[in-house]
Length: 232
Image (cartoon, rainbow, N blue to C red):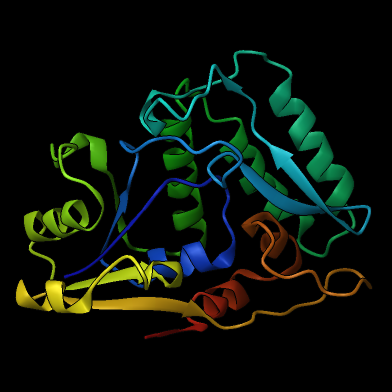
């Protein structure tokens, strides 16, 4: 069984979804500390043809809290404002109608906690893109918050009886293949290949939110993008 573990990110870039699609089970690592100004509740889209960073508003967010302890803002206006921004940026995109329907469904999902809201969004995305991976929250299963870093990841792998653990390429300095191999687990890192497509008539801006990819590409092409990586 192939396993991956990642913090929940809202509508992430294609590399995140490549990792999700590459495994049998994907663990949303939601009982670790929230990171301010990270990618959990922020991402980039195009607005007026320019890169635009949006942020999901939260209620009393703090790096002293776990991700699954963070709540969405209870201001009812922010979802409508975000959808309006997305509409303004992409209403002339070739696949706008379908992409906006998916995005609207994700944003308007009724949840109080950030992690629950993001997890629900992944369910919608997985269905739309035919990603068959099982998605589970770490907080619901493993009961190992006393462990840290590599030890905790390894423990989750062992609990799941995983034979193959795949991590983002940024973890090459954090995880030791020898330690995993001693437990009978193969460790690889996923390295995304450049994915390009037409964004109106602009110079291409890479690695934007999946929202951007949905707006400019057919599902069959996005499914091909999901396989544009190598394991190292």
